[in-house]
Every structure is written in C-alpha cells, then in structure tokens.
Image 1 (cartoon, helix red, strand yellow):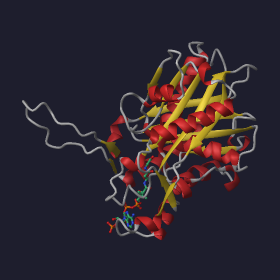
Image 2 (tube, rainbow, N blue to C red; image 1 turned 90 degrees about the horizontal axis):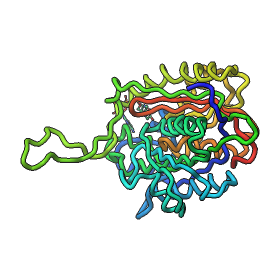
Image 3 (cartoon, rainbow, N blue to C red; image 1 turned 90 degrees about the vertical axis):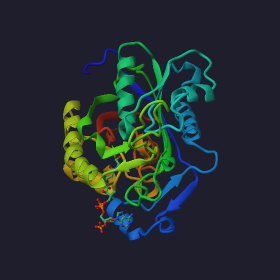
Image 4 (cartoon, rainbow, N blue to C red; image 1 turned 45 degrees about the vertical axis):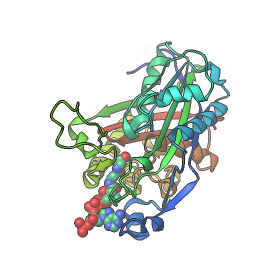
Length: 337
Ligand code: UT7
C-alpha cells in the first residue's frame, strides 16, 4: 500500500517483562550445554519466563496500559484492538478481546488477533495503517504478547536456549499535525519454507474415523541452521529495500531496531547498513527472543535507557515463522514513552 490518505502517528509504546530470570547456567540443569556455547552462538545470557498463574495475557495487559499511558489517549477512545501474539495462551477469547475486557473498554469496538509469529507487530502496524489511512478507525492499540516458555520443548537444547517471554504494545492514531510517522512499511511471506519453524497443535480426529499418524504437541519445532541461513541472506537485503522505499538513505536513519532472534543475525543487518553499535538496539543478551514483542520492548526500553534519543527515525524489521518478514522506517516523536 502506498500513499496514506490520513497520516499515522505513533502515539505511545510500552512493554512488560516477567520477573523470573533463567540464566544460561540455569539451563545446564536441564541438559548438557554451557553459557559459553549459548552466548557465542546467540548473544543470549539470560531470558525472562512467566511462572505460576502468570501468562502472556497479564504481560500484554501491563504493556498495553504502559503504551496507553504514554500515548496520553484514554482507553475508551481506542477504536480497535489488534493482538499479534505468535502463540497466545488462549486461541479464544483472543488476546485482543481479553485486552478489551481487562482494560475495561465497554464500548463495542472490533478486537481481533492476527498471526505472523515474530513479524506480528509489523503486520499489525500495516493493518492499522490501512484502517487509519482510510479513516475506518482513528485510534488502534496493537499488543504483542508471548509466553514462549510454555510452548518450548525444554528437552530440546537447540530451541529452548533461544526464547523468552514478554509483551510490547503500541498505540497508533490519526496524525493531528499532518506528519506521517510511517515513512515506509512492507510485509512479506514465503509459505513454501514454512516447515522451518512449526508449532503443531494437539488434536485427534473424530473417534469414528482413522486417526492421524502423528499428533502435534503444541511445542516449537525448528530447523535452527536453516532459519539462520534464511535470516542472514534475506533480512539484511530486505531492510535495505525498506529504507529505499522510504526515500531515505541508511546513513540518515538514526537507529536500527531489529527483531531480537540472534545477536549474529542482528550483526548481519548492522554490517549491511554499516551502522556503529550505538545505532543498533540490542537487548537479546537479557531477554532472548520474545517473538513479536521484541521490537516494542527494544524500542521502549531503548528510550528509557537513553540509547534512543527522541525525536529520531528508526528502521524496524521483523522475521519469523511462516516464514514471514516485514520492515518499516518510522519517525519516533518525543513523548512516545
Ligand atoms: O524468530 C526466529 C527464531 N529462530 C532463530 O532465529 C534461529 C536461528 N538459528 C540459530 O540461532 C542457530 O541455528 C542455533 C543457535 C539455534 C543453533 O546453532 P547452530 O550453530 O546452528 O548449531 P546446530 O544446531 O548446528 O548444532 C551444532 C552442534 C550439534 O552437535 P553435533 O551434532 O555437531 O555434535 C548440536 O547437538 O551443537 C550441538 N548443540 C548444542 N551444544 C551445546 C545444539 N544445541 C546446543 C546447546 N549446547 N544448547
């Protein structure tokens, strides 16, 4: 889509992380591994996980509250909620409907989830851009929340080292000053390589018919090597493409805020753009891969920690199961968090 009729403003961003920390050393209690192996291959030292009754719904609610507060917009003025979890704890009610209920939004507004795995935030932003750009809705809450720890196979040392839990949220609205905060935005997918990352839900056929040969267990199955190859060959070039679409030059953009999947993948994008470390926002060391939440977490925390100065511009990029990928060049205004 090109040429919004109504420009979009990123009004507020927020995040929430669970408190429990699992370090690489902790994982040595589960299988043979080491902090050195994990850190050198992924850049991850620790990740956060939910515990007890806590789920991604709680994290999503707190991230949403945080983003709404930063936006200065009242919850009752939200016109639409889009949930963008990779694997929400409940398929229905959807994450978005649960947010509507928890936020106490009694107005009857649309609330729905879309699934684009770790690219969910960018996909949701594209949908929101369409709605706002055409005047269908004015203000939209996007919430990405995942408790990956509940769908991780904790006996598989190739995947369980990577993932963490967390939530991020973004409030977007029709721009009141004519400036569009989306300078470019593109999303894409290649279902022909979808087998690289799968989560197959359990489920048996009707007892009166032949059963399937295999039944899913709801856990992440991943061909890590192939995902890695896909990411370092496709994503850096694609980020350049998104920058080109914005009409800007890489050197004129202040920050790269990538999906936090693997530090080496982040560095492959950084090298392509020839960015110094200061321009690249990475927190994978502390949180691992939090799926669709990773970009808004990195963005909000980056501002809080003073790594991202406002106002500024940033290129966002996500990629993940599907395979899906997406990127955006955005303007970050003062006061978004
Ligand atoms: O949102 C997208 C999400 N996914 C990703 O971003 C995944 C991208 N891929 C990766 O980050 C990497 O493929 C991993 C970090 C997951 C794995 O690194 P790798 O260099 O591709 O390792 P590998 O799976 O090829 O395994 C190499 C060796 C194997 O041993 P052998 O067969 O060579 O003897 C594994 O058994 O390392 C072994 N290994 C481990 N050793 C210690 C696998 N996992 C571990 C571990 N600790 N945790």
